[in-house]
Length: 73
Image 1: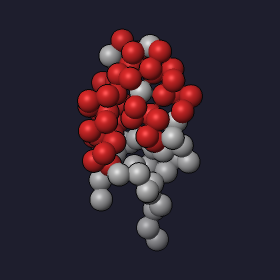
Image 2: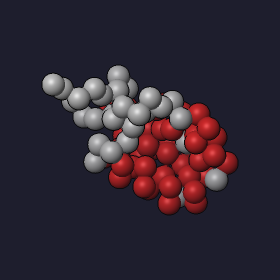
Image 3: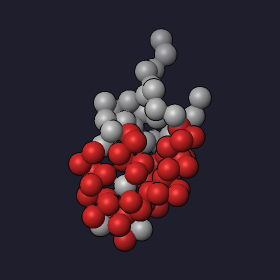
Image 4: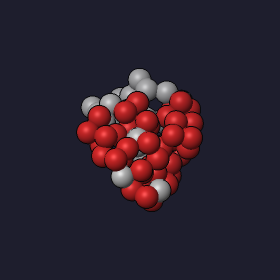
């Protein structure tokens, strides 16, 4: 039985995370609106949170608002 995955595009998420992660755009794209606002207000946690999110996306450990993993297919 195959594990369910998100319908969000992994490549799009990775590009958003790298280019606009400090503004929370990657979190908005994944459906995490509250975390996106928080990340926007803290400018990506002074860059640390943005870097952690890039690593999570690249390794396939990032999930959408429904808890489904966003993976490279």
